[in-house]
Image 1 (cartoon, rainbow, N blue to C red):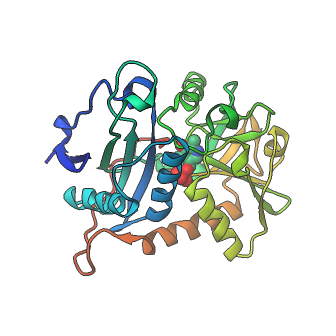
Image 2 (image 1 turned 120 degrees about the vertical axis):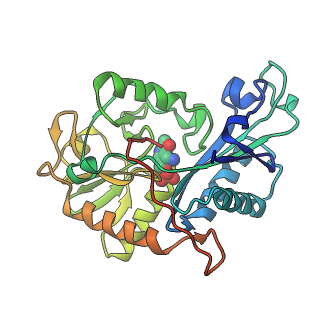
Image 3 (image 1 turned 135 degrees about the vertical axis):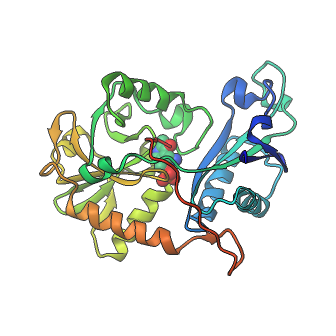
Length: 309
Ligand code: PMP
């Protein structure tokens, strides 16, 4: 059966799930989105994702036609309709249909789309061995131009870096900000272990403040691992003991080489492995149940393919 896609309160089979070409999400990338994951019949950090979506709506002056509680229920219902207990969920809120000009006031009604599908993951081998990455010339958007804290539909900045990644033959790359500080990957946050301390980029340095990132910081504190937000540049990365990336789709994945410099001993580090293990354990037991107690359903994860979502 074809997947059922939510559009503005109704469900359509994938083939008939369509929005207007006059939607400013299509014409201008005017809108916001979320990437959410369900594990084992539960939605992971659903409230945090809904909150980030509504913060993006506030910053872009997008009046959502549904409340956060209604949005939460619509996400859960989309999973139920598709019988998915292990899933990747994409929520898209665009400015809606208007005229060909930029003015958002010409778009009376935002479009809300929810897609739930099987998840594509990096091949297991990359988790076992770690990623090799490079830094690229494309700089992360500055906060003052288009704040990366908004998960806006305009991802061309990240796509330009992804094109460099493809050209150079790497699955992921690191982006610097205009001051030369390392910000994040094209779809993941970055962590370092330096002198025994866990470091990650401050939310204000030009990153999406990842929900996985925040969970890792909390887990580290719970585990007694010294951690803090810090600005760091390429030298700090090259000379770190460990490095890893975090994101909803990738979870946490070790980085073992950056710009040809081997990180640590070239294997996923001990602290990285401890945090990944603790993170995975938590995802199996926490989260918002999709089905009422007793009716829980688990559907196998999708085929491996490689992702940057
Ligand atoms: N940075 C960017 C640019 C991203 O697209 C993502 C994925 N949503 C992340 C970081 C990781 O954020 P999260 O852990 O909330 O998925």
